[in-house]
Image (cartoon, rainbow, N blue to C red; front, side, top):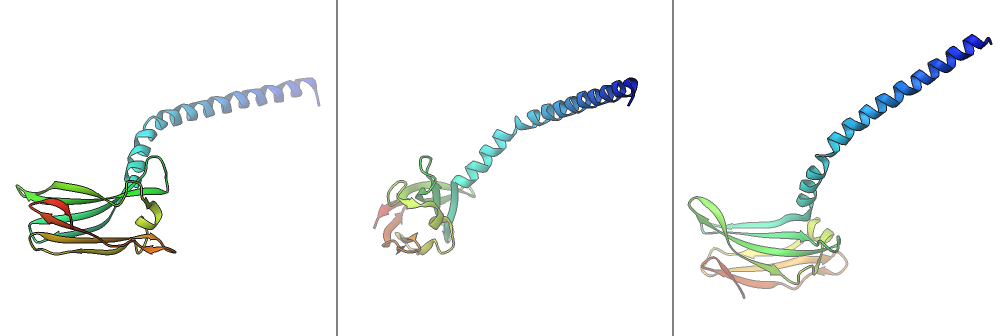
Amino acid sequence: MSLTRSRTRRGTAAALTLLMAAALGAAGAGAAGADSTAPQQQTETQKQKQKQRIASSALGADYKITLTALRSAEDPYAASVRLQVFTKSHGAWKESDRVTVGDVDGWFWYPLTGKGAVCQFSTAGTEPAPVTVSLLVTPSIGCSDPVHYVVKDGRVYAG
């Protein structure tokens, strides 16, 4: 191979290398710009994964009662369960009270958010309205003992 041809090939290779580096740099800059919104989107996704409604019941036009699993911030396997009572105000449901079912972070996230998580969730449209909750501890342990509440005037009381 002649000396001229060798220099031309090296020059072409160097030019292609620079061109590729420039293209990759531009693509990286575009990706970096796109990444600036990724933490915000990721945060919204994480928030959605941090809580999950596991049961809900409407008691006529007076009350709506929900059970929500709340994933622990410290332990990804732990969760709490929130029982919320909503009353209708000016045509919209508004929270009137809430209690934690069991201990804070006293449940397991995956059984609570999986199939068969709610063993018993019974309500009645009387005043006071009785509410009974039993949840899956784990598939091998089974269901928790039922916990009883009453809802009176939009407030939750131990039953």
